[in-house]
Amino acid sequence: MSRILVIDDSNAIRKAIRRILEPLGYQVEEAADGVLALEALARDAAYAAVLCDIDMPNMDGLTFLDSLQKRADLPRPPVIMCTTHNTFDKIQTALSLGASEYIMKPFDGEIIAGKLAACGVQS
Image 1 (cartoon, rainbow, N blue to C red):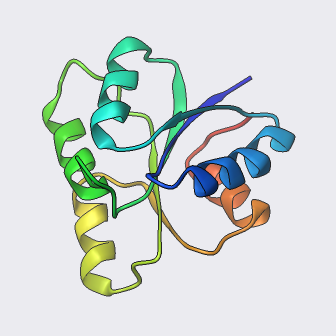
Image 2: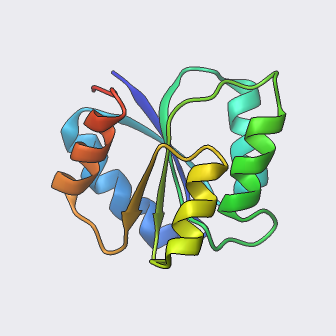
Image 3: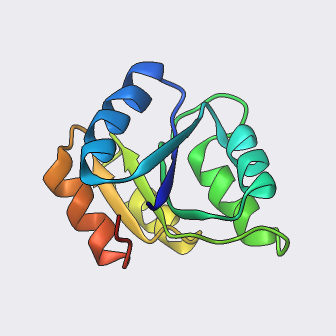
């Protein structure tokens, strides 16, 4: 069973994503910000993918991406940004910092499954 790390400061959003991913056969881990996500990646390299919000306290999603790219000691699973930002500038910045895909909120299971498949991630 593939493990997915979900990074979002909203507990409700994390739970909603969990309710989408678990029936698709994924095991879900959660982090409330980028700092906690980097710690999770440092503890365990077995994540098949990361779903990450942009707007979070402590460390936002773009800073998380930048930090991940600078940390040679951490694994680099595909990162799919899940956010309400739809400006070309934000999307381009996220992709230039290493995001593999970009999903606009609100989203559903079909969209998430499609983006995971596009990244080569299977449950």
